[in-house]
Image 1 (tube, helix red, strand yellow):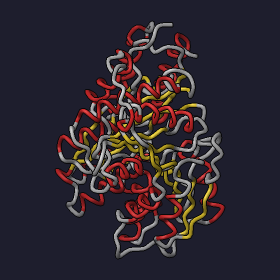
Image 2 (cartoon, rainbow, N blue to C red):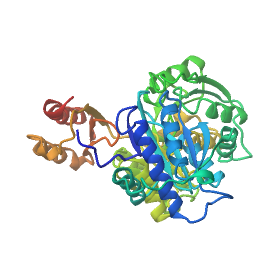
Image 3 (cartoon, rainbow, N blue to C red):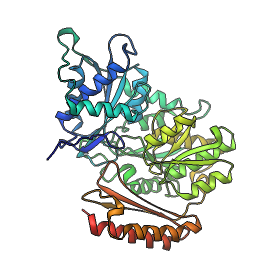
Image 4 (cartoon, rainbow, N blue to C red):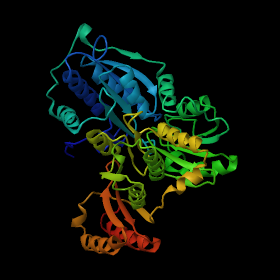
Length: 460
């Protein structure tokens, strides 16, 4: 098998742990390449002393392997490493800035099963890497151009561990919630997915005064995302009803996303959160350019609601990286994805599930309203997303009959404001078929027909 010439996907490097590209060998090369690139971006380290890179991770067993390989590569290039242990992805981004590091790395496969893992990079300012920086790192991994670079003796990097990273992130997250408010009187169910939020989210909510009932807070290295968390929010919803809680919060493994549940057991997803927060900010005239940013996967009803309130919705390609890029280009401050990656740029540089939940809680307290009441602020179009596992990612137009059927589907739903969207996942071997229309019957009809063609021709 030939060596692939690309290892970065839509959100860093990701795959099955100990199989290329997520191997110790490639991680070591990535560490060397990244250290070289970040060291040469600026001639002087941001903080005192030498260049340094922060490394955090989620709770996967394979994190130990990748962490050690990455750090070995970085140290071999004369750059110091700061280990901060398990911490949510947005926490790693924050600590990178807080410690004045030259870059941050988080070892995580986010919402994927435990046998996967991945590597995400952050710039010194806590934002994800530009495509050209990723391309430069990738080039160095494969070209061998820095194989001769071998600092020796006192020029080799050193590693240290920071023990207060969790505390730093907890205080940072609490600062996004108004000081005049507290969460006293609220009972909240939290499902941490046995991931990196198992300490942080419960601590923040308790310190703000809430009664917190926690699930998914016993990570063992193999149970991350397994039948729990944001990937299985039905369990959170059931627990909310069992405990008669006012709110449920479910994270994925690295807590950069969140799904909520109201007191009636109804799921509240990223589109709901964007609608609730966007409309509230529009009413207070605090949404820059009256603009909310989302992706092509967000429900069409979100456009209608935001426009009716005098605002506008800008859509990007799928991936919070693209949402953030659009926000940075134009100075927008709120954006996100239906999946629950929500970015409040006044507080964070990347999707932060905890901060997103705190902003909804702020609105609940300010309006003295239940989440079931807030979620009625908009009307969702019937929508269906079908995920088809595939053995190869063939361009859709090359599938027999697919282009014609897609055109027929688009013609059928467009007059009523619906749409058809088909893409391959950037992180998994899956094709995603999304159909929206005014009726559920129409949605089911076209999404099922399109998925059948994919499944028959390239299904795994």
